[in-house]
Amino acid sequence: MLMRTDPFRELDRLTQQVLGTSARPAAMPMDAWRDDQEFVVAFDLPGVSPDSVDLDVERNVLTVKAQRPEPAGKDVELIASERPRGTFSRQLILGDTLDVEHVKATYNGGVLTLRIPVAEKAKPRKIEIETKEPQHQLAS
Image (cartoon, rainbow, N blue to C red):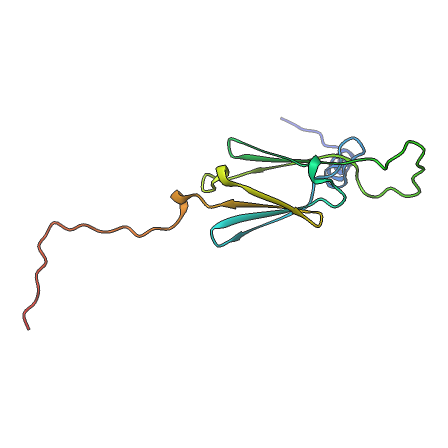
């Protein structure tokens, strides 16, 4: 099957994914790391009210939604508008090794931090070996 590609359409699609559009702003930047027995994710959400942030976990998919409102007042004339506004959304697929029942979220200084503990079943554990043979000691 022969497929025709349009490089300008692909560039436009990539630009919209990275920069977003006025109808659908760009995704929120994040960092993720493992800290001992926790998985930590930090989202940059400056200018977003903590009341507008919505967290949801369904079938190991974590969804973060937030909203940055337009400037107050209808008579406001924007001189420059570089910060995206509207509703932001990001989804993370969490592995089965994480305990999604005990996610903790904090919002401080424009950063939403999620701490997701590692599930007990995924933690390393020592397995004891059973033997059925009697232990023989060597005589010295």
